[in-house]
Picture 1 (tube, rainbow, N blue to C red):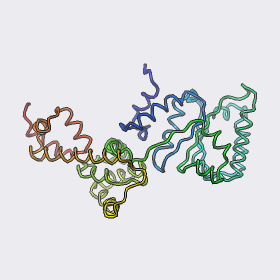
Picture 2: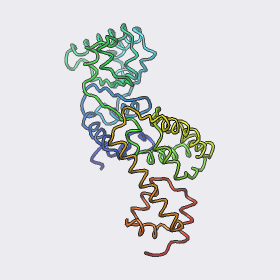
Picture 3: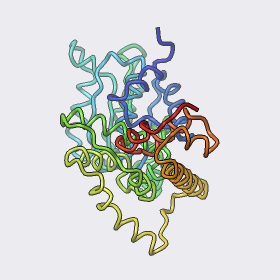
Picture 4: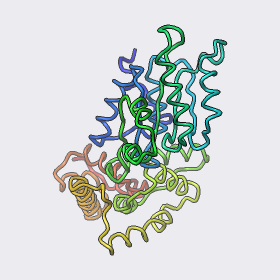
Length: 328
């Protein structure tokens, strides 16, 4: 028996790829999810487009006591007062089908117009005033890609509705703030789309990850997935590099850094690039004999194998190295 539902779900790569990460902020986030999911507290999930808000909303549901009931996603971009009023009647329906839906995921909550916000607030107030036990518990999870506090201050979002939906907040980091997770994400999406497209996963050149680490990823994890899907489809990793190199060069020439990039993140990125460079130089000097390279780098053979996997050394180069390896 698996003691932790969180551990079980995080070990299901095909179903929860966006929630992986060795980044400390992501691991803290995942610990929070395990605690929050056990409650009925409304959750607001915030983050840039493509950071995995939908994945975290579904993860919260799967870890919750309501996991056996339905998960109902509503895109607020297409919302108007009519459907919200219908939702109120729908939630209170007693028939066996409708009463099973007990988690509502309100995606893009910032898109609700004033009339829809008023209707939703009325819905929440009525539920709160209902006699205890009249209806089964309902879980609300909302998501936004904008600063909702600013929307409240500007008057575009109702303050009371904001506080009712924001029982607790999960803030998802951008991909550029967790670049150490890029190799694992790339490998995950490579396997996923190789299976979906029924194609052999192409070898990835080491310089691909150097390019990936220097790119700003405005579309975050979703953009990375789309790029890896193209790599699998066309079997050409270098085309993906060519696609993002102009943006990297432009930012470099202009001295542009994303405002959310911290000194700690920049230092980590530099460290990753330096380590990758040292490993590749050692492998080249030893004609890709990994055991000799490990000795030169003064690390264990096992550690080197792990780091080689992280930086994405091509299979052909690894096969070449195996032929020249001798016992330590």
